[in-house]
Image (cartoon, rainbow over all chains, first blue to last red; front, side, top):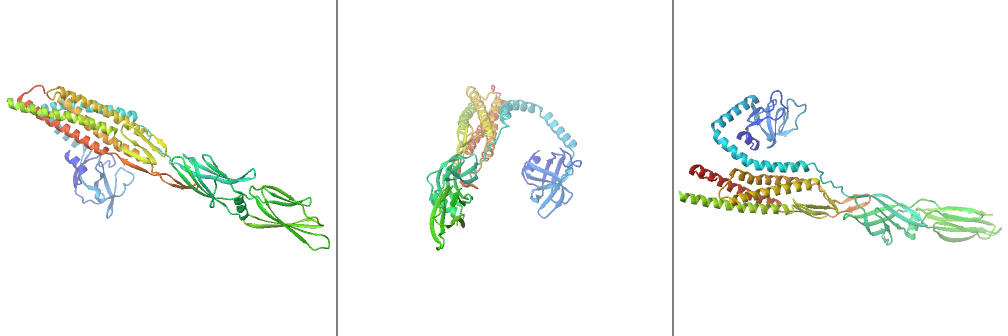
Length: 336
Length: 195
């Protein structure tokens, strides 16, 4: 018994191991006693290797390399993982069948009990008295464990926030920038800063998962004419002690202005929420006279503009405007 | 003979006093183990865990764990059972002149060893469960960079206390066993009764 326990904990090249499973059947069966000695093994030998004091394997060697060996149970369909040679406790030199060693051990224990029966009886009596409180205690704890064992563990979902969408839309002729988020277990508590380029935006609204503010007219005009995206920087306090720093490049909407002549008048319509600047040059002439030019600039916010032409027999109009980074030019026939 | 008896009586008296003191110390130590926080958290995770109660708040959201609840119930119950058992032995030893029902008293005293083992085992479960609390990390998403405050973990002196408790238990049981064996031999030799 001492050797049986000792070989588990001390890496000596001699030991006794009882077989626990049927992985080596039929040659070695469960409860057989294996005697292990020496480390001079080769392919085909049965060895015992232990990865810990409580996990030892008794299998046959199928491959040996410089540092590792691979074993396999005779009854197992697959190989064991490669293990270091250092883990090998030794080669199995003798297997005592379970019928023999259990019988011998029982006989030996029986003799001991018979020989020391009086002492054994006294020891049992004392032991029962000694062990009874521990059994009662263990039962109480065991019942408690049985009642409460199957319980859920800590499951924490780390909060996250993602950009859902952003857009610039029209609200009563003003461009409103809206940034929406998709959040998991978190929400916006307050907005600290909003910058468009380096200009601070002081007036804004926010909900648990969105931020919106009005795009200043001049910035809207700039972005509409240059076609650049609106660079928005946001700093917001989030619930659950979070802090968000977001930078977004939001494109401005793409609805081209409408320019046409209606009843000999120039009609310009800006369908966008942002203003556009139009340079209008009237070309007109009375018969026999040279062309005359009359220019004006109009900043048109959302809506339409109707301009009457000068009094002349022949009238053309040139309309120039910058939109989304390009300069557009249209010459329209008005009259004559 | 009377000198020997006096000497035996004196030794028994010392052993009894020692065991009684150790039982009191053990009970006090058990109470300390129960109420001492095993872990404390501050920062993104706040709160504490002790064998009697816990409150863990992960980023402002209270965390519950059935495993920790179960451990609390089991440890508290087993502690109460152990304390009651030790009080019973205390009374038995206090009221009787000799080690009456020696085996039974020894068994009850040995509960402490089992208790200490279960305490240590449950501590491993507690640590494994508390390790499920994730690290608070900063995330970079399409929304931008989201930062969260980190947290610090403070380990309580629980291992030290369990060590002291174990020491007390070992000394207590050792004193009892030595006293018991010695007395038993004397009884067998001298024929003293009431042991």
